Amino acid sequence: MNTIKPTPVVRDDYGYWTHPDLPVWDEGTTREQIDAWAKENNGTIVVEWMDGDAPEEVADRYFEVGEADCSYWYPHCSKAGNFLLSIHDTEDGPIAMFFVPTPSQAELDAIAELDSKFNELAKAASDLVAASSKLSNASNAEEAEVATEVMAESQARIDALVKAKEAA
Image 1 (spheres, rainbow, N blue to C red):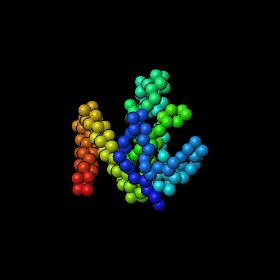
Image 2 (image 1 turned 30 degrees about the horizontal axis):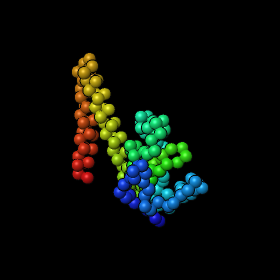
Image 3 (image 1 turned 45 degrees about the vertical axis):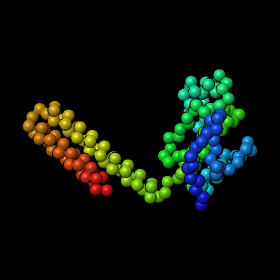
Image 4 (image 1 turned 90 degrees about the vertical axis):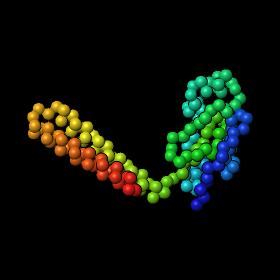
């Protein structure tokens, strides 16, 4: 399996650039062919159009004022691990193509573990806040004692999660 790698981006005077390992595609290249290439390289392609990605004043410079370049557009992709493949012009205006590597099973497992720990931490923090509110609104010693115990348990769970993180 091939895997395309990031490379330094040096845009030309008009703001365009193409990754040196990107195949030469033309108007006849289908999205299916592009997606197949991405899959062969262990990833996916994300396309950002200038008119949807750029702030209005930036897009207006190209589309309304008619400036011939897009060097003032700094496209972005929110997908983790992405890198730029190309910024080029089309019949409908400039686009940016990003490559998003497919995470390995180990990376997916690590993400799942982080999600689980985050959810545990969020639940413990929520319980701590709720117990604190109950403590401040307690109408008798018994309610105050129960709320204090819940706060202590929640804080202990938070401390254990932090300690585990520090040990990792």
